[in-house]
Length: 341
Image (cartoon, rainbow, N blue to C red):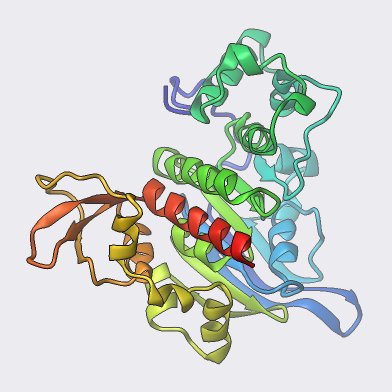
């Protein structure tokens, strides 16, 4: 079953839409020292919008102003044309899913109880909450009857973060905020969860606002990427635009800091030699890249299509590479570099 697709039973959203507009928004904790300055941007309905930048650049502050966890100092934030200050605070937060960097499950509550916190506050019938837990756990590969009655301490870090993600989806919000949700996980768990998010992105009509400091993650997940530095927006663009047309030296340096430049030394031949390839010479779907293409080109292409086809030196189709296979390759590469360090 597709998440939230059961005849709209779970569609209860007080905000009524999911386009987010920032109009000249600033935030200062001390007068004259803004941590976010003059932010103007529009996040479209059903867009996966990534906020990225170095530590202290203002990306998390920007995210938290959307659900009023941090109050703005000047300017306006609107959701579907209505200022966020006009929504009752509890309703605003109930109707915006939020996934933290820290795995913030309540330790003395079962997995089912953790997931149904907001639906229970909204007074959903018990049967509907149980159905929703089954649906959500299924969606991230956790067997419902095996996991629903477990305690958080019985789960691995990756499993706990999966529960944190589906808890944010429990009341079927239109907007999901995610604050570096994978940064504390090992590379394999991170790659697997990134694949889960890619699948959710394709299935759900939701607006995701996602904070990360990892440029590889941003390029893989984002429809558009917003790069921050010192509280200001430096560049907004698609993954293609960011990689191919970096606005200035800061963006180029930030790409290099994420090992994007290093990856230019790697080609798709390296990926196929590592066995991350579906050997299907009859494949007809997806753009074609040669074995000599850089890994960066695959990252960019797979931001816009489920699979790419690989062509051999003679132009023959060798097979396909998916998002999941590329993520697994990148995770393995990260782990190997860590072991060699």
